[in-house]
Amino acid sequence: MADNRALKEDFYDEDDPFLDASDVERMMLGEAAFDDLPEEADVDTGHRFGASAVELDDDDPFLVDDETDAHSAPMGDEAVDNPLFAELQSELETAPMGESLYGEIDSDVPDQPVPRITIGAFCERSETGALVSVASEDRRLSKAHVDVQMGGLPAAIERYHDETTPNLLIIETGMRGRGLFDQLEELAGVCDPDTKVVIVGATNDIVLYRELIKRGVSEYLVPPMTPLHLIRTISELFLDPDQPFAGKTVAFIGSKGGVGSSTIAHNCAWALTENLAQDAVLMDMDLSWGTAGLDFNQDPTQTLGDALSEPERLDDALLDRLLVRCTDRLSLFSAPATLDRDWEFAPQDYENVLEKVRRQAPFVALDLPHVWLPWVKQTLLSSDEVVLTVTPDLASLRNAKNLFDLVTGARPNDEPPKVVVNMAGMAKRPEIPLKDFADALGTPPVLVLPFEPQLFGKAANNGQMIHELDPKSKAADGFGHLASLVTGRTPPPPRKKSFLSNLFGG
Image 1 (cartoon, one colour):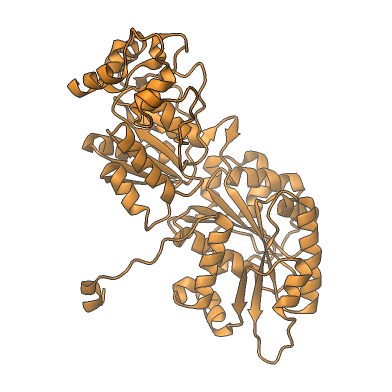
Image 2 (image 1 turned 90 degrees about the vertical axis):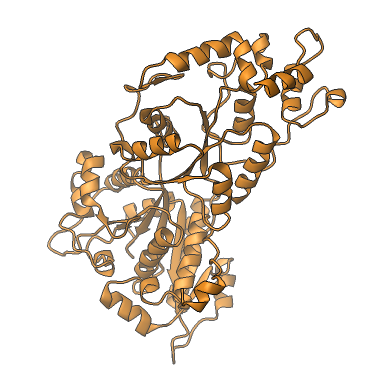
């Protein structure tokens, strides 16, 4: 308290008619000396986190009218000198459970579950860690993977130097001023662009709040909090009714039948979830001949065909029953794979089902059949990423060229399809050189998989993925590389073994 008062005496003189609020802010952040402040200087925010979910507006409880003295309220405990901060603090101290600055939250917490996202919480106080743990057990977060650790901001920086960041980071810190922003700058440098960040601070601080939002932090929370308060915050970030959460779709299609597009899709989806620790749904959309159930050794009684038959009945509860968990992070929407009926559905039916599946996970892998129907074309062109699998022969090149031109022409503002050459180097088979493929399509392939019938055949017969069977194979590395390309995320570097672990075979 005394230190904050000294800070106020140094930087803030209520009788000084020439002191501007923005000048006070910059001095508190240690970004300018009192005597050499320019009239209009932008604060250098350095690295930014993902797009902030909170906009600065006149209705925000942390902001006040520019003409009031509250705009230049000093940091920390001195904020109580301001009538607005005193009122807010009083509300916080007297609010019953289930209420906060934001009003009653019991009735405002959405009933819809948060999607299958990953959440990393780094707390400084055991009480906050317990609160996050209690919140993670709520039904609304039942699909999310929540990891709670102590250590605050330094622990998060240390961990994510070696790992990919989750979809949401919750960081508790009691720091303020330059030290805090230096550490946030370091954290932003190791964060993936789409990671959202929520800061749990110690006090209501207008200067700190405004600067955090400038740097792309999604929300700033202050105690006291309840589990429902935290759940509501997370829900608002991922269940905005004006911008509903939608996972990224990756469509896999082959240039002709038998090129191995389904194998590429299944192994890439597995690598996406296991190597990059991202939740995903794999949709086998080849209703008559789909092999995803076989490849993952699953035999579900209800399939995608049931959802398409009555798409209007498909809600989150029914969808949970239709999806089959292959791993902790990968869910399968299997195809019926039967010939006892004709699977004829309108493109709108596929679109409606896909729209609901996209609310389930950050990534949705679409295993498309090699047929050319209106729904296939619509699904392909509306996907966020397209992976085109080819083999090095003339028919595949011709069809790939047609598909490539169609997709790039219809999606001028999107990346072109990512081309995967499969079964390259087959003995005694004449092949078109990869350079000719690249010249014809205007882009080189992102992945070339050698012809390895023993490895791929054994994996298919065992109901395993390539990485499970031979994690050191070139194919396993290739699928990990492809997963990184379609997600925009990089896998963590391999951890170096210590001398003792090498000595004892760890």
